[in-house]
Image 1 (tube, rainbow, N blue to C red):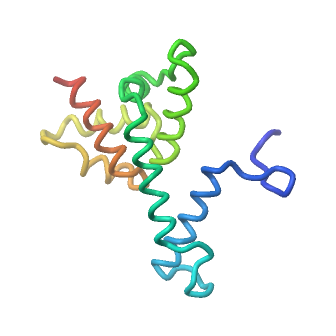
Image 2 (image 1 turned 135 degrees about the vertical axis):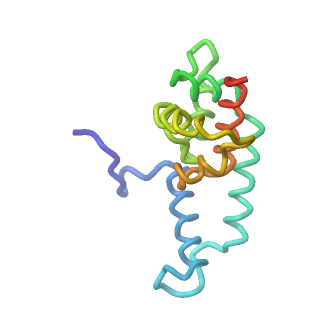
Length: 146
């Protein structure tokens, strides 16, 4: 059975390493970590890199590709190039975007409630998903409703 094995011969992907560093730093900041108060990596550096990654993702992602993915579950084709597929996968992973099926199921329930923005309700349904992605999901769903 294949899976993700992380060891000396098989290092983790860079984005996973960065997510682990961010989680470690957040643990230190929220005092959930029992280790020393000083982190392995300075929190200002991690915060700066996090902002840089988010800026790259928000300026590079073709939101038409995201819209297609959320509405239909279709991934970008090879006609769009590998870049579109790679950026979409990074965006989905970075912001912890739920599957299109889960989004559709949530909007089927949310549509019964008349509200100008579904973001607060989406946040209740998907608490681990970043607000940036929830706003984009709301925009995609709102455009398809109207």
